[in-house]
Structures are given as structure tokens and as C-alpha cells.
Image (cartoon, rainbow over all chains, first blue to last red; front, side):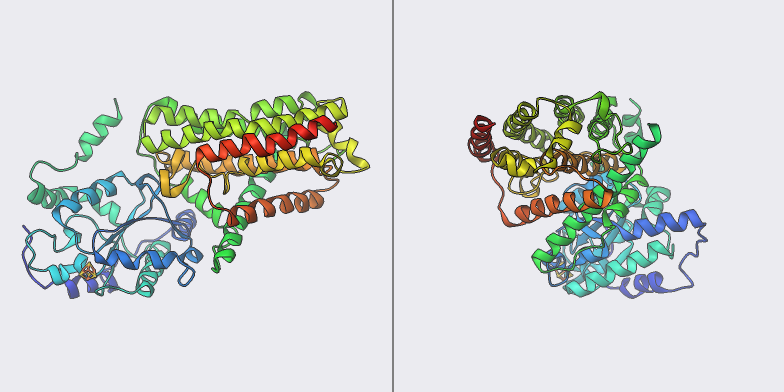
Length: 208
Length: 292
Ligand code: SF4
């Protein structure tokens, strides 16, 4: 079980923002072009886990119009690039979120919307919600606030696009692949052996 | 001829995606939004080509989008771009309208094959709706095509195109045109005939399981195929085009009407759309056939 602390919020935000911590990738010209296209076109799978979900639909309306930035919603994880986890995640929901994330094709990114994904928010002492989403899934962009306004979400998208375009930080899906044991260990703490199939099991299925 | 065909495909790809970008832009304006940039659909398709693929349902699944692509390209190659020009004719001297109508069915069939092998319920629902709707779409279009073939004593698209120098078929055979045009609106897949991929009902419909590169192929083929359909309508009813500029102007007008109609009307259910298509446009086209 993750500890019930209220720390973590400031630290994680600092890690994401600090130039010192961020990884300075040198991009070749081709990689630059590839990253530019990835940043310019984002298909979003919006997973409404918590109350913050109510702030997601407005960004597609005429008032906020996020389609200007090349962001559109899709109905299936197969085509999605971005997973928005909007708020607190109960243990039951988390499993579905992980399944959806693992069905997405790389490159994929996660946006954690609301304080609940950062440190548990007002559910910090709840018995059945996770506290730090980052322990179970690699989060690329946190948007704090309870609940964040649609403007904040748009700014989060703009920052994430900037990160992708200039390779400012290592993408979460690479961390998920490389540190899979860490994430799985945390997931198994909650679900026991009843978790999603491992990478090996997945690939064994693919080669049949 | 090879370069000629390549140029045809490239032009259809570019115009198809530009029109799709315009469609998104115009719909955004109708909603009171700014909308994405015109080239957004290009960006989307290139990004999708750069994504990895991690699903596997066997070779039939992968063959589906490729057959759709082949259907779209062969349809396109048998339709001449320009009236009386030696360029951009592709294979059109070897084929005729009957062949084109036949090839147009290849796309939904390829789609059905790919989706049948992945077993996703939303995909299966989508393609069942698509094939049911196809019955309604084909009737008026075939009747209009038969009318034109009788009137021109020829099934050659080039001949039908050049015979319109005195007046467009749209004005000399207005009833055939209306019947074919309503069916064309359905072929473009916009409202009110967009039962196939209706997002509120079957999520992405047939495309639900497609991802990465195969989704990109499916998107590109739909861009090429919709340009081919615009081209066919212009050639059959609007006298073809003497130059590329004229072609763009005429296809754009047709496209604009389709987009605006799509933005105004709500969606028919599958049964309603088949019933409507079998009654109204088929009836109009049949009356038009009597006058030929
Ligand atoms: S951060 Fe606030 S608004 Fe968002 S899910 Fe948590 S409690 Fe709800």
C-alpha cells in the first residue's frame, strides 16, 4: 500500500519543471521532424475516473476549441496517443486504466488531471483510492488544481507538446518499458497476482 | 502511363486530405469554432504512419486495409481526370462505367474482411450497418448510371463526358442527377447517412481495432476514394473539366454541398436510411429513367 503522505506534490512538480533534472536529448533532423508531427497531432483517450472529468468536455466546445492544436478525441485506445486520467482512481478503476494504457500503441503519453493524481488530493486518507498515479503509470504531465479549469488543461497540452517537440523529458512509455518491474511491483501490491498480463506474456501471445 | 497513374494517385491523395481538412474546418465554423489547420489531416496520417503496431489478429486483418486501398486506387485509375486530355487518364481507355461501379464495392468488402477477422463487436456492428446501407446507396446510383448509358449509347466515361458539350447531364437529365446525388451524399459517409461510424452508437465503428500504420492506410484510402467519387460525379453529370483548376472548382462545389448537408441534418438510423434511399432517390431516378 502506498503511504498516506501529503508530500510529493512539490517534489514531483519540481522534477518535471527543473532544467537540471530534465533529460537533454540531442535530436537528429529526422527525429526532430518525427517529434514535430507527434506533437502536432494528438489523439486523446479521455478516461473520466474522477470528478475532474467534467472539465474535459468543455475543451472540445466552441469556447475553448482544442482542435486548433490538433487535439481530437478518439473512442478506442488502439488509436490514442494521450491518456487523460482525470482525478482520483479507485483500485477498481485503476485496473481498467492500466488495461487501457497497455492497449495503446507507442508512443503514448499520460496526463494526470487534478490534485488527486499527484498526491491523493482530498482523498489522501481514503482506503480505496491510489495516492500517486506515478507509481502505477508513468505520468508525462501533471495538471494541478481541484478541479483544474479547462484553460489549465489546454496549457497542459501546450506544455506537453513543447516537451515532445523539443524532447525535453524522457517519454513516460520508455520509462514504463525500462522500469516495468517497479510499476508492476506497485500494481501487484494492490491487485495481487490478479494484474494485467506481463510484457512477456503479451509477446508470447503475439508470436502464436 | 506509369507516371501518369502515379500523378493521379498523388493528386487524389493531396486533394482528398485537403478536402478532409476543409471539411473539419467548415464544420468547425458551423459550430462557431476556429477549427484545426487545413493540413491537420496530413499531420494525423503521417503521425499514424510513425506509430508502432501492437495488435495482431492474423493476416486477414492486415489484408483488409490493403484491399481497401487497392479498391480505392483501381477505382481512381479507371476514371479520367480531364475532358479530352491525354494526361491524367490512367487506365480509363481499358475500362468503363460498369467496371468502376463494380470496383467501388471492393472497399466495403475489404473492410468487412479485415473486421470479420478481429471480432470486435463495434467493428462488426459498424460494417453490418455499412453493408446494409450499401444496398440502399447502390440502387439509385445504378439506375442513374443505366439511364446515362442508355442516353449516350455508351458505357465509356470519356464518351459520356464529351457528349455534354451542349448541356450538362445535371440539367438535361435532372431527375437522374438528383437520384444519383442523394446516393452520392451517402457514399461520402456524412450525415444523414453516417450510420457506419456513428461515434455515439458504435464508437469508431469499423475502424475500432485498426491502429498505427493500418489505420493510416485506411485513412489515406478513404481520402483517395472520396476524391474518386467526386471525380466520377463531375465527369458523369457536370461535363468533366478542361483543366485542373476547373476540376478543383467543380469538385469543391460538390464537396461543399455534401459538407453543408452533413452539418445540417441529423443521422438516420440504418433502417430509416435504407428505407429513405429505396423510396425517394430510387423513385426519382426511376422516373428519370422513363424520360431518357
Ligand atoms: S482533484 Fe479535486 S476535482 Fe479532481 S478528482 Fe480529485 S477531488 Fe475531484
